[in-house]
Picture (cartoon, one colour):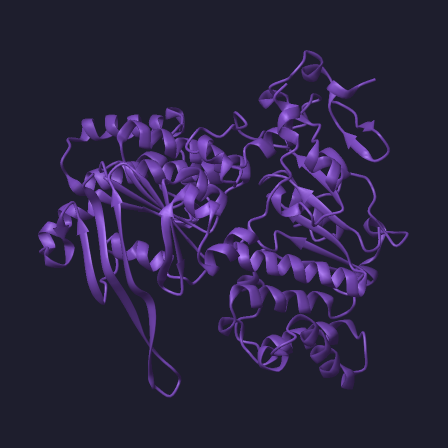
Amino acid sequence: MPGEILGVLGESGSGKSTLAASVLRLLPPNGHIGGGAALFEGRNLLQANSEELRQIRGGRIALIFQEPSLALHPTMRVGEQVRRVLAAHNSSAKNEWSERTREVFTQLFPQDADRIQHSYPHQLSGGQRQRALIAQAIACSPSIVIADEPTAALDPVTQLEILNVFRSLREKLGLAMIFITHNPALLSGFADRILVLYAGQVVEWGPAESVLRSPRHPYTKALFESLPAISAENAKNRKNKLPVIAGNSSPSSVPRHACSFEPRCTVRMDICREYEPALVKLGETHIVSCFKYRE
Amino acid sequence: MEPILKVENLVKRYAKRNFVGTPQDFLALDSVSFTVSAGTTLAIVGESGSGKSTLASCIACLETPTAGNLWFEGRNLAECTESDLRKIRPQIQLIFPDPASALSPRWTILDIVLEPLVLQGKLARKQRTTRAFSLLERVGLAADMAERPALELSGGQRQRLAIARALTLDPKILILDEALSALDCSVQAQIANLLLELQNTLGMTFLFITHDLAMAAHLADEIAVMSHGRIVEHGPSAEVLRNPRQDPTRQLLAAVPRLPRAHLPATQQ
């Protein structure tokens, strides 16, 4: 949906980043998209030719990577890096590039846009680098930004700051976002809808409020319980063991023809081992893949 | 209780020069003082660049402090000779944030755990192997994985391995520098439980360095908040959380992402 923030939640290896990469057809050569479709503004990205894709990537759909220090060129001023994005997409006339670059930087660094623009990445802090990456992503006014763990390397204060940047961009530019993370707490009060992935499959999908407050899938529940709660009342539970999800995540590479969470599930039933659960609709928009909710 | 570690007015200054060569010192630690009692956990929280990791390196004797004193079990480290230090260093072990780059990827799991024992040369070969296997078991790594390269381990398993390696020399203090930050939430909980269990059975002292205030509150007896090289607030965990007195603490607390906790009663049915 335009202007929507979709949170994608899952642990390492659950397919979060693969999902982002396949939407943009950025999979490594050994990756093959088995089937399905990714529709962007009514067009199927999986059938787009390379010229169309080139225009869409970075232009209409921008991707923000995890590690801002690796994603920026170390010996090029960050302003120049944004100009190059504009140049690559011919999105405006040459003489407008600098103008547009300044505009984007003023949006992200209201105080000292000029100084930052002329800085090298190593002169910037982690949060500033992440903002510079966001500047690069929104330079061509995309309609969707896919952010893959954009705040993983940041401390909580900076993390909050970056989330607020995303929030204000959405308000100002109507930007839609796919926000990939492994931390459910980050999505609270931020995402509109949440998609939970486990072993390469969607296990739960629904409005953020509903998923966070009343998770239905056993995996989502267990994941939320494993987070330590921060509050003074919680002090009595301190140093108690946290509830964990037993076992390790099973590799998604082997099709099991059974529920992929079954080996670690605490409420498993016989049927879970025999069939793969289908997606069940709970209410209007909340979808879950678990046999517990079969009609 | 006798403090196992006492840090007194610790200062660490890094000499920095700008491009014309004018010296400009950077004060990473600005007279930091605290004590830690044996068998307890002190969490050191603070934003990036507040000096947490510098503090860790100084305590682990990897960096020499510019000024100030470090006391370990009543001995002043600054007055120790190199041969004394060689006996003290194994007792303070450090676990690094990124287990993937802290371990040699091509070494086998067994070799990684054996190396500190070989270097210390106190045990015979057979005893070393027995000890290594018991450590692997203790941290929850299966014995049949011992011959596999560290490369094949998942993030959580690597951190378990790093812990096993740190435990080989029976340390009294374990410094965990962002040891959980690189892991998934569900794996963080597993490693946190392992740490609690180790502390209960071995009576170890932990210095838990993190920017995750929720985990700090869960694991630690006391929390020290650092900002710009200074400890701005230090107290029992519950106390620091209930009424934070200083701005950096309040900012950190306000920035912690929280989950609505309404789902808990529903799942306890």
